[in-house]
Length: 476
Image (cartoon, rainbow, N blue to C red; front, side):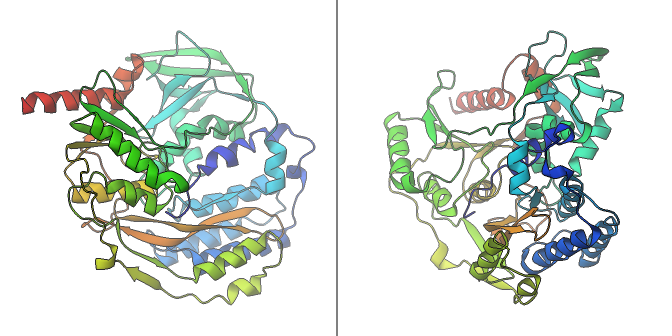
């Protein structure tokens, strides 16, 4: 998409984790019912006017029911956090991974500076169950791959369901939800339960069930900054293979020269296999993704089929930007024309391959963090080139996703921020929209996760090695 979708939950939830214990905080301010309802009308109007997929996965009557359900909860004064819970659980029901609500800028800044007590391990999810992924502090008993059955007398499945209600995802897939939860679970748990010095945990490992008391770990929230530029390596344990890691599609100024240099180096190494790692790639600029594809596609191609919106995007963005200044009124929002704008990409959108591009075997690595432009990239490659895809279902939809221009609408009284996309983009996919992500050819199963995590290995990389070795033997 035209702007990288940042993993907002890392910021939004970690910033409020200490809310229960912060005395001097905006969260002690309670807003009267009339201000809450006034902001709700503003919030609802912005979504109904501009959201490109408000009714894509649910009927209008159903969405209206959810709006009314949320409005009915505004029957008493609330602070920002309480109000955020009402609005965020509402937008989750739209099934748009690009759409969410965050606390006001001032409250976020207040909450971002304090350390807080967290569970001493990270998690991954599988089939609506929680498993230990890595340790924040080493512990010999709680091993990677252990299923978390109970935390402080509450079932792990119940805790996971609570958290899922606050996490946005695309369509009917849980892939992007699961990805976000894995990165933010500790902060989300702290948000819902407050700081706790210790955790009584019941877990299952290789059929054996045990219970142990674990001490909390004290951490200050921080943003994890991923490497910005793509890199290529040539792993010793994967002969004749180039491993191209694409962390995002936002390196706008460098991409022409960078792509040319990367593939010049790949050609110099005379490799037979190209691995393109799109895991945790949350998207970015379509033109960057398209340029990269020109170096390894075997025939002319399209990146996407069409896009559509319901407002003049430039004008709506202008109004949205001015909500932070308090100069955009509800009447301004209500006057916006709401009509379908659609652009269909025909011959003018055909992309041409580069002379001397890579013609060997291509492997794509995907997961729930393969989102937005990265999911469109994976769908376009899958549809138009021979390749093998390994990993997990993409977070972005296989048939398309919303995104494009992303805007922030600041609510007048509470100053909570509604983040929403203005475009829907149709992917290169001949199947109808089933509301699911792109599925891999080789899926990483729970059994693989349990096996390799217990051995301290990366399941995707180990399966990739086995797949390349099998192809090499077949070719011989």
